[in-house]
Image 1 (cartoon, one colour):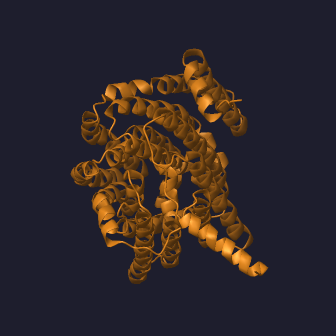
Image 2 (cartoon, rainbow, N blue to C red; image 1 turned 120 degrees about the vertical axis):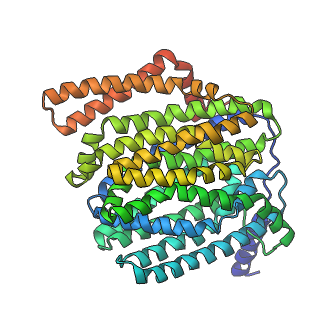
Image 3 (cartoon, rainbow, N blue to C red; image 1 turned 180 degrees about the horizontal axis):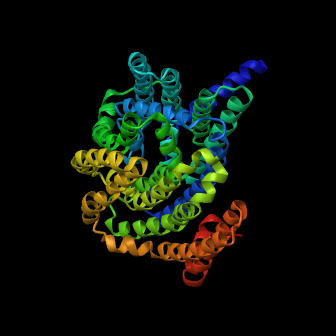
Length: 512
């Protein structure tokens, strides 16, 4: 047999082995340990991603104008709307169902690719039509580039879902970080060296999506076969049918602000708005994507073991708040110095909005797991009802906020949504799983108290530094060091066991 034939036969054998892959049976043993470790790795990914996002935003703010970010934000909102109708919850179905066959995985993959390809085409057609009625000449090519992400994401979507199902959260965090690095490197090269402007930024996002899909396929040894089963398709569509309604109502509630700002104010103001929420919402969105994957996978694994629910939720809220609250509170405290030094004087007007976004982020972290809990325990219809009820309230609040308070008014209007969710959807979910809200609030006490001490220390130092007219760079450095030291010191003094547990899960002891 020739070397070429040997290589072809070996490749075919490896492909066949991947096509025969099935995820191992999951049990309830060690779920608490796995959710804590998953939360820790996700938290490490969030911290690394936030630092990289900070560096990226500092560089990109000097390469593009606020209006450019506003156009990208508007294009992203448009493509996300079309993508809603392509989301039948296939990936969530992979995580949720106990027993999966090879035909299930293959059917879901082919269904995902077909639907996402149709969604990408629909985005291009909508952009082509709307191009006749808008003054933004860049909108059409940007939408077309963003739509390409749909197809690229679908290629590795089943692998990504299987990674969550099998608790491979460390690998998922690595994939997320690699995507952020790729966006930065490719975007910077195209904008700075080749002068592609806003198109370089969007192209970097597309290349990053391709890299992440390739890494998902490399990490999880599965490839689709050519099997397609209508019965299997109906089974998974039946589970995910509520996702369309939930995603549509959620989209309108969380995206209405962007369209209202673009219409009532300007794309430049939309660019300011996008950058004001850049770092705070990056922290929150990464948690939403990664940590909520921990919650969904965990609850799907213990959906028949209600006794474990309370302990798992307590761990999630405890570790989530310990890792993310100080980031959001810290950004709010140093916002005046940080914004000017990081982005330049052009972006100074966003300081109040940055602080309000941090407050919104803290509130949002209390309610983010609700959708994942509902999906994990088979109550995926609940979020749609409450989001529909809130929809007209939200639109009125955002319109009033934009009219009365411009950008700051819109952020304050958005902050009403997590409060509404706590008393409606949150209360109903916690009643269904028999977990009192009070116990979850108690779980966040260490982070809240430590953040209050950090705030008092930094604000006191700030008054001293301002009175002595200290320059911005040492002002920012001293405030950051004092804030971080105070937070860690509080935990060491009063909640040392939590720090030790975090260390244990991030750096587990090796046996032998």
